[in-house]
Image (tube, rainbow, N blue to C red; front, side, top):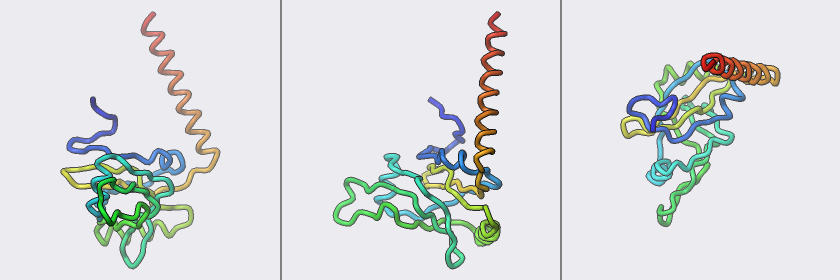
Length: 159
């Protein structure tokens, strides 16, 4: 069974559905993650929650903050901290560019999608501008109109 938005050689772990609802994406990047072994095992089980996840910049490095990766049941004596900050693997020019853009008012870097690509965990991050209530209402209205048009077109074709 194929999944929508699935690219060749990728296995989807989780998506941040709230990000698309709350932000308008201006730019999207792929980043690697520095993980512990028990975190990787937990990700293979799909036990991740984006809740209030975002990317922050500290000492010319990008860090994923607020993403909850559940502890692995068989981790042994020393399981990982579920909400610890995780380092993102990006080129310096990408970090500098994102940091400069995120410093602007109203822009933030949010995690969008977590997936395996060629055996490695990758995180899709996006530079997002927060939507206001009217933008969200416009999105809902457009989605409803498209759905109604598709239904009417399908009814027309059947007749």
